[in-house]
Image 1: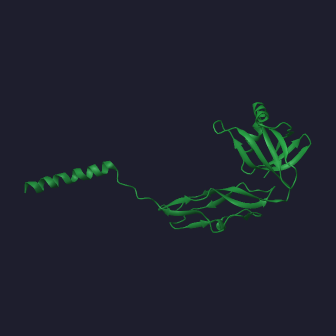
Image 2 (image 1 turned 30 degrees about the horizontal axis):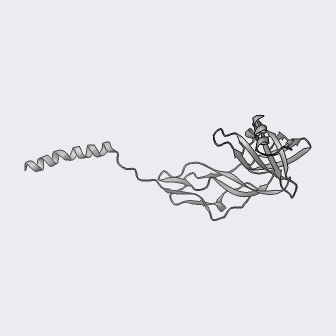
Image 3 (image 1 turned 120 degrees about the vertical axis):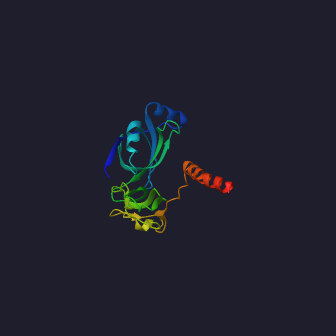
Length: 204
């Protein structure tokens, strides 16, 4: 995974008033912590942060104002209505260090025509090197028949990545397609077809 470089400024003003002032300037208050170091309070450019967070587990290189660190987003607060980023918690990481993250699970292919794919988990917890976090894991479900189950231990994880979740947890399985109820129009036609027979029986 490539690094996203973001300019950082040290923040000395705290509290709700200071945070509102930062956001009005299209910037984001953030904290950087980890490795037993003192928490660093930073201000980051809002637009760059918003773009970076579109990538799951994005690796951020913080630069400027005496800061030169690698970090992973661990907590993001967003405005519930407008969706812009209000605050970011960043975890300090080092090259070669192992971290536990959630990566998305996606599928390719189509299951057997008689079945329906039921995906229980859309992401899975794994351990990977901080600078080589996979973007996700892809599962081929082509031709899987009803009753097929893929557990976490069956996932084809990239090299250097290990499973952190329960190995037996079900990620996806194939179930029977639900039986479709007859359409109202079809029922009406069936009743109409039976009507002449009923009339003949009455005449006899």
